Length: 63
Image (cartoon, rainbow, N blue to C red):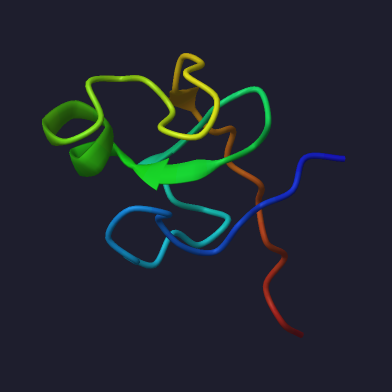
């Protein structure tokens, strides 16, 4: 199962499971879209891999 890390590994921004701003590499390193485009040049600083949009995981509403 995909690990849903809760924040950006660059700036610390919160990235909940429902965030469309989360980007990941094949090792599941997680960064926000702003850091990916403005700081990281679309490459993971840990492995050099491509950073792509992380799938959204729906969180069920509490009853």
